[in-house]
Length: 260
Image (cartoon, rainbow, N blue to C red; front, side, top):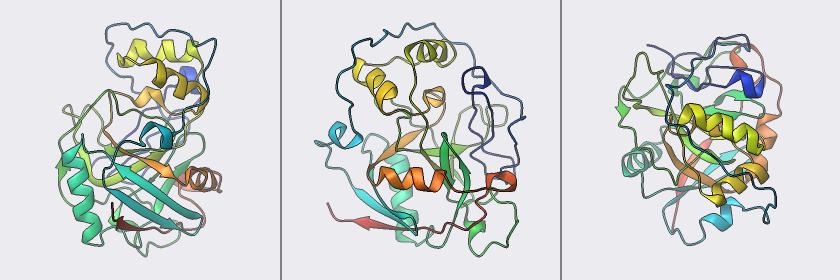
């Protein structure tokens, strides 16, 4: 089974990696970058007078969608699932109801980028065992929407790379939660030359003041966001990792549904 990957942009961020896999994440920082296909150039206006930072909570106060709770030893994260990505939402809910994620690990962690989990093979995995191959045996059709983007706290689906997966279908279970970092206007302008993404003023401001990973926009399906517990992402992302970016200390999770 081939790797599911997230592509970094080495020219902007100084590293590249394969972070989302249905096989073990095996890349190190020297891995080659696989760039997105060139798209129509899009100008991003520089926000020289930034408005107060938009928080993920404020951005979704009116959204009454279903919420889930991810419990870890580092704290809990409340995640809002987007109604606009029903295939991913319903699949995630089904797996949660089945107890699929309980006891699995955040098996790949990269500071200033993301924390990844959802591999069923990570349950009771031996120390040093490479992870990232497992899944439920199916993929999910991509659901790209411009209003759902890779700000800090975004919940998105891992997938195989474009060569093996030109339709950019998502893994049936593996996901990542964005940490990222703050993005300057020039960096964002460079990114859109490759991704072809178009951003609203609020989205630009969020990337500049809250941060994220905009180089993944239009490439991976975002289907939710952390609305409580953003600091838990930072705690997990800061831990020491070993081969394949696997945390040296196992970070187990339990995911449950919350009432509306």
